[in-house]
Length: 207
Image (cartoon, rainbow, N blue to C red; front, side, top):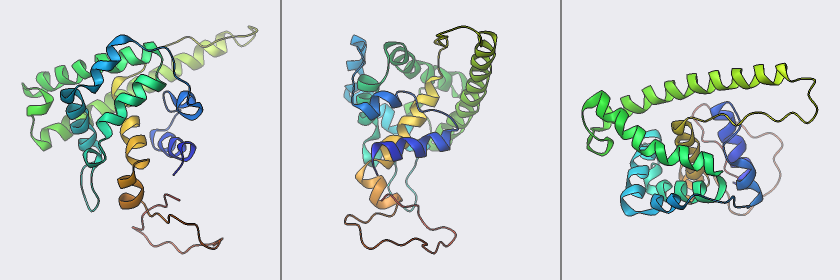
């Protein structure tokens, strides 16, 4: 699966544009914040791997941790996020732990699998409401300035958990494990089939 296909699939799942997609597709690197390097500490990579593995756990195929999605998140945030989005993501590491302590009285890494799932389900609902409100605000502002030449939408903050979820999906489905174990993959294209039979439960194609 190429970059564009992966981002298109994640955007479809998330119901909106993928944060940092323009840099991911072009290979450009925005000027980053110095604290981004902290994402690559062993503790932070392990932390992000556990968050990702709660979003995409091992089932009939390996989960996100097996694909080392935590390290992928660090690269994407460093290379493809604006400084403002980098700060949101980095601050989100602490906010997620704060949410875990508030809900269960313990850091995320100390929670049981079920507690982690319950926490992330709640955060996912929170980010969906946050994103809906943000989109409404942007739409209202665009309408208000519809007659303004060269109107530029305001830079409103994004939700850190949406970023984590997007990066988990993008990282997993562009990894070797995600493409060959969770999806169906043929390394060398064969003949063209215009209509391929599909049975309920079949894996999607990576190629």
